[in-house]
Every structure is written in C-alpha cells, then in structure tokens.
Amino acid sequence: MTTTTVFVSGANGFIAQHTVQQLLQSGYKVIGSVRSAEKGEKLKKVLNSDKFSYVIIPNIADVGAFDKVLKENKDITVFLHIASPFRFNIESTEKDILIPAIEGTRNVLTSIKENAPQITRVVVTSSDAAARENDDKNPNLTLDENSWNNATYDEAKKDPVSAYLGSKGLAEKLAWNFVKTEKVNFKLATVLPSYTFGPQIADELVLADLNSSSKVFEEILTSTPESVGLYTHNGSFIDVRDAAKAHILAFEKEDAVNKRLLLSSGRFTSQTIRDILVKKFPQLKGKIFEGVPGEDVEEIKQMPKLDYSQTEKVLGIKYRPLEVSSVDAVSQLLRVRGQ
Image 1 (cartoon, rainbow, N blue to C red):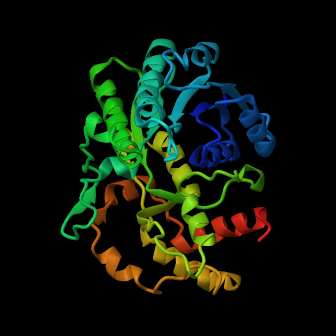
Image 2: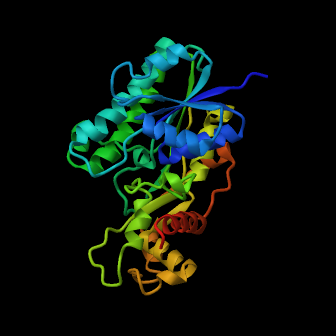
Image 3: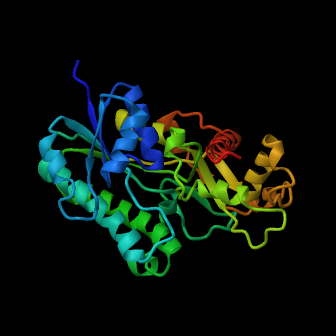
C-alpha cells in the first residue's frame, strides 16, 4: 500500500504543528515548509518520525517559492496551505501581512497548477475573519458559510488589525477565483478557524513570543488585580486540536469539496476565560485581574448568531469546550515558565 504524501506550508505554526502530528499518527508521510533550518530541526526533533521532512522557504510571497519542492517531490498528492502571518507587532501592514497572505496563496496555487498535476486535493487555511460582515454587535445578524468580509485592499492597509481581517477574505477569494478561472486538477476546500486555543504539541515549542491566540491567556496571566485598560478579546473559539483534525477531514472527505468549513466551538469573552482560570487554578485567585464574574453572558448575547451547521454536518467533530482548551493551554504555560 502506497503512503499518501501531504505537503504542509508553515509546518511549525500553531495549527500546522498539530496538523502535522495528527497526519503522522494517521500514517501519512509529511513534507513541511519552514522559514529556517533552526525551526525545521526543532520541529523534526519533537515529531520524532522518519515520515516527516522539511524544506526551507524563507518567504512564501516570493514568486516560484514552492516550485522546487513540488518539482522534486512528485509523490505529493495533497497540499495544505496553512502558512499565513498573524502577528500585530509589525512594521508594514502590506509587507508583513497583506502581501504574504495574498501572494503566498497565489504562489501556492500557481505552483501546484504548473508543477504538480498529481495533486488532487488542496486545503487553504482562512479565518472566520473572512466570514464576518463587520458588524460584531448585532444579535439580529446570523453568520453562516455564505457570509463574507468584504473589506477592500485599501481598507485593509490602514492598521494591523484591519490588515489581518482583510487579508483573510482577500486571500480566500483569490483561491476560489483561481479554481473557477484556471484549469486545475485539484479540488479545493477552505478551513476558517476562529480564535484558536489549546497547547503547543510539546513544551519545547512554547516560544517567548507567543502566537496571537495564545497571547489571550498570557495577557490574563500577567495581569494583576490593579490592572486597568486591559484589551478585551471576544468572539468564537476552536481548540487547536479540532482545527487540525478539520484540516485533515477537509481533504479526506468528498463532502468537503468546494466547501468553506467554519470552525467554532462557541462564543467567549476575556471574562469567560478569567472565570474558568480562577475556578481551575486556585493559585491565580487574588493574583490576576478577575473582572466581574459572569459579565460575559450579556456581552455574548449581543454578538451575531452563528449557524455553521453545514460545516458540522461535513466534519462530524464533537468540539472540545473552552474549559478544556483553556486549562490545557494555561497548564502548559505555567509549567514552561515555572509558575
């Protein structure tokens, strides 16, 4: 029996590392792209599998960035494009967010079309940001798999948050348009995670500079009872392990072809997480800013409704609840940082 080879871009990213790990556990061979040998070696050591190898692609926005690896590895039949920037401490909204997201997606699809006709399934990671109608406080609005963020490139340029939100919709639209207008051999699905919570696959991969979703926990853990002006996060969440599983089902399931798969285990605010952490980690009580317990309930009621039933029907996953994601993430952070 021939082992299917899956390519994963941005293999050391938060969702990608879990996806690679689950692919290996399911018997797939995986080739991942990373930006440096140091990152590749670190991931390879953690995964400890002879079915994983990596290639170095410093900048996915470079034209032809994926040509070499696809020309040299004709056994790749599935491509998961998970790499995309998600950091707000940047110098340029275009150079650091918009161009990598949009041109990276264009480069992947062009390279597959020109160099890898044997690839039959492609999954592009988008974000629930691509399915927002820019009205986060309208309880009469229902968002589903047909909802889109319609921000233009010029609107997205104005600040890092707008750039991130806009880049997701623009890159995903490019992918769907590419499949529609070009003659390709592959079938496409997109996966749209929301805030993605949970642990890294190994303590060694917990970085000093955490990914943006994990920073939600760090901000709460480093707060004090006297903290003022804390940034409040709110929206939908998904456990990183469920997001990884969704990426695999997105190419394994025929029902996922041509689908936008929107991932949400439920709604939350920073207060929801504070309440969980104070309850589950007694040592934090009185040491962090605890807010007003239960204050999240009314705020969540003001958010748009979500109807992701089409996705849930395709995937058939029972998502982990916020309590599990939060406890696993914070347990790891406290352990790594000796707290």
